[in-house]
Length: 105
Image (cartoon, rainbow, N blue to C red; front, side, top):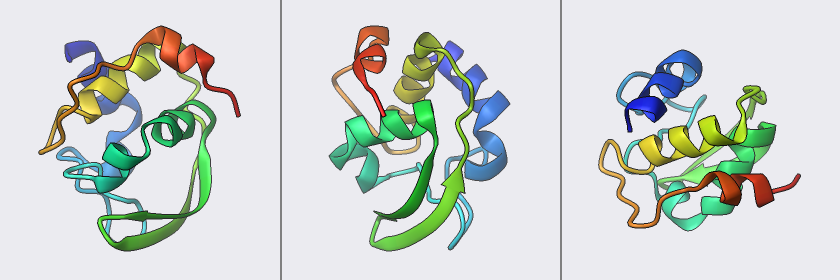
């Protein structure tokens, strides 16, 4: 969790903010995110390769661009575990480096 928090504070906090609430109508919230629960692989892919186009989080549609962060697979696993277990999110299954490595565009 500490490694994931460090990655989050370096790369994600600017858009998704310190408490994961995002920016209304611009950057989706990570806090209490139904998208994270329902779209594990797509969430990892978005962090790994960037993301653009519409997605719906907690009933609100967002259509913005997230550039790839240039993180390695272990950093992606760490930050995903942090996000998926913070701000009201909970996942009993940890994201592993092998899982991240297996995800392609």
